Image (cartoon, rainbow, N blue to C red):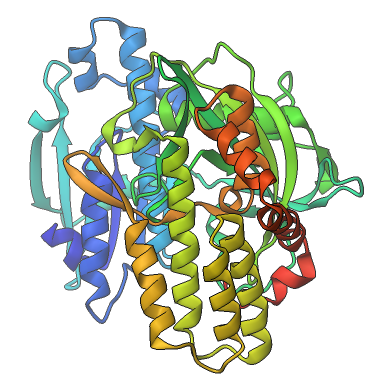
Length: 486
């Protein structure tokens, strides 16, 4: 940690060191408090997937079956890479870090630290196949005068290829049932706040669930620094981007048409992306039931790229046991509805405390929030908010009222001996909760979904709010005119 924090540049050659993301994150936060802020360059090299069968590490000692050891190694390498990518997308400086894949078994595992005094400090890890990785001997020393180890690390880097997800950029097809891809972007350069771009990205959400004695249970993941790059504290079904490799032709491996020609992203590509997310994030290689395409949906952002979502419903194997750090948990219908209601109150408080909004902006966001309150059956609260938003500043009484409502609907879950505060439901799933998620829950048999929909349709005000809110979220010009997400 001391060397990580003090070094100007760092090169790491690793396989599946679970502690690496935590070490780098701590070092990033420490460097952020200094004048440097970040490394001149951070380069992390992993072995390519094709090399993993030839790695002989501590997993070989734990698993008597070679294939089982390989499957676990692949999963761990992906998890470490994913966590590292996630934290560098959040904390890293663009152009100052890279993650690469080496096409051969690395000749060593270790790190090279370029220190401020010009010296090169080396740390090598000596692994033994019969010992766990934690028992590896680590040797620290300064590089030789002929820079032997500096050159050895450089050769590994130069032999590797940079690994970055290339997401699809384009626009919905005229019929809006497919996505027309016209190009690609590095994952690290999309959905940055304030980009003010009209680009579209292809994405997917799968309403994931499992069968239990209590019936169908929705499975959603808590967004934490270990599981996501955005919307911390919110819960989400399985989601992700559709990338260039998802569009590969199986026989040839070609990723899309030649010469950058535009093409329609097929449903098969979206399904391939879903299978990839399930395998890489949760180690699920096969589902008994095929994912069902529920709908395709537009998602407009006020200040960055818009998203075109393929919305699936996917039953997951009941026997799968999720690692604690994945935060994949079952949720009840009443829990989900309460969490969304809490999110509405939090949005109301955020808007009411924002003194930079002009009258037009206040009217727009106030209208969306009132519709959301009515949809949850909070008609009195919606009327009170509508009255107050017409003024230049809301009253202390209103703030107290909504603060109490937010506190009353506050929800937490215990996981890994920690209490996690749930701030809401992520992105599209928040907007499409009543129009798409709850009807899907009803169809698969989630307890309470039918009662919730019946209550909405029996109340004229809630029914109208549902229709108008769906129309409002589907109005690109209106949403892009907002100054914040509501």
